[in-house]
Amino acid sequence: MENERLILVTNDDGYASKGFAAAIEVARNFGRVVAVAPETPQSGMSQAITMYNPLYLRKIREDEGLEVYSFSGTPVDCVKMAFDYLLREQRIDLVISGINHGSNSAVNILYSGTMGAAIEGSFYGCPSVGLSLDDHGADADFDGAVLYGRRIIGDLLAGEILLPLCLNVNVPVGRPEELRGIRLCRQNRGFWREEFYRHEDPRGREYFWLTGAFVDGEPEAEDTDEWALRNKYVSVVPVHTDLTDYRQLKHLRRFFPAACDGEPESRK
Image (cartoon, rainbow, N blue to C red; front, side, top):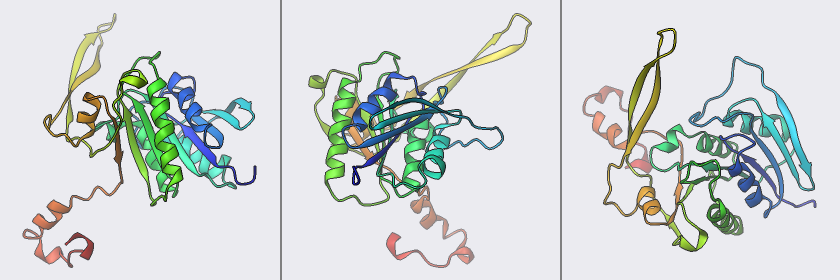
């Protein structure tokens, strides 16, 4: 169909993950789907790109209205491959990244390959949605994430979209009937505290395993993504990439007056 939407699907758990299949299921409700995902799991890759190694693209599957590719790079590499090579002569109408095995709420967004890919899609002027389920299990139940992913994207495409647009959507664990609805939220100000566990291999060389725990910096705040997930709501956080700290910019003017050339009107 000439006016059929073209949806790009990617993720960071790899093309063989159950969450990737669930994201494709969501996308196929809205148009023709081209799916490009990493060959191997790429969690925690954020905005990483591959610069010093060759990259390999392989078609995995082709059905009516669907093409699936595996790519040997990072999640952001997958998005770049789609926009700049594979589909460069076509207009991509929407990017869906996910469905991730594990939440990408709070500061996780900065580490997430899933959200790195969604953000990259928004750089191309394309509406982009990162979908995540708060369950790391390889055999997690994605029914709730599929249902709410379909609902959120359907509402989004039915309305007027203000670009650039990137949504970070996180779905709590539970059957669809156990979820309480959708909450528009802000990002929680929590952080991770890591620990390194030291071991020795059979030759006496030390090696380390990284683990850690998330610290909720504002557990009583009811307008954050972490609160929504704890209370069985699907959290929706609109995100952007301007990392300027405007509060500090204003404060630092007293230390560097000669470096100031006026505060932008939009920030006064």
